Length: 449
Image (cartoon, rainbow, N blue to C red; front, side, top):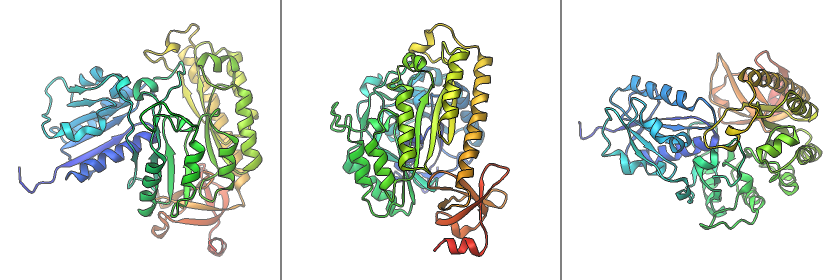
């Protein structure tokens, strides 16, 4: 090989914002060591796939992207990391084309393995650990791929929800120091990125493991208070946060802040108290309703997203309708609907009265229709308002897209000069694709000032 040849690395991320932050950090490690980052469809020497275990299709998705890598370069090395790699390393090692599987402890040490790695004929190498060994924190953030940056502040989870494999895949709850989060946020701001999204597995639980132990002073409020003071950050968005950890003080800080945006994503999972207990969630519907009411009291225009699971074992039609009716009367903005699937080594997998697959799909469809109604109703309340929009880089059929602070997806004719800019514009009309167009012409020009 030519001595001047620059090795190329390609990356693909499945799953959550946390995975995007970690993939971006791994990519920077390789670039700093001399690799050139290329698109996943391009010829590369190394293909790294960061996997997710939340969906039941983890195995199928992993195989699909291994095939994509082989198509781009049959001799390229394929490395699998992420939650699926931690949970099912041996299963992944038998996928044709995979050369290396790295568990939760090893994924940030790819450079230690990559230089001596050879293309596998049959069985991939596996380097994984017992999840109890994953008790340290590696700070991460994503830049370069999107208009916004995902900043990892917390990892792992101490909750024991009966349907969830995340504690098995990511280990105990642990956090970055406030000082390091502030440093990373400042670095992001200095790169001209306008919006930071705080990410983690259970970010409201921030503070555990900060000093290598179980110390936990409920300092999420202290964290966001510090971030609120950083110059150069125009928007900070809190990703999913548990309702029992979202305090009045946190909501009040967002309401008063010029940086934190009025958008909350709060997992519910079920509107039935009986099922919440079976799920081992740490709240009941009354607390959840109180959180939503508090947000609406101090932030009437806030966007509120909800996670909900359909088809959990024992979810009778009566229990499902409890959930449907509870969500229907709540002043929320959209739903993320998940269909329950049995996961190995979870308590729920052996529970009685499983819901038929066809019924799970029917309930999923009902809630997705409700979500669309909620979203359109929320968007209608925003029409006529002049709101700041952060424009993204994508050009889709001559249109560009962006989000308001309160997460309304907006479109306008593509203008390269608007990319990564925040413009104050009047929301005009809900289009057929579900986005909102802005008022054009002189009125829009005046709205910038």
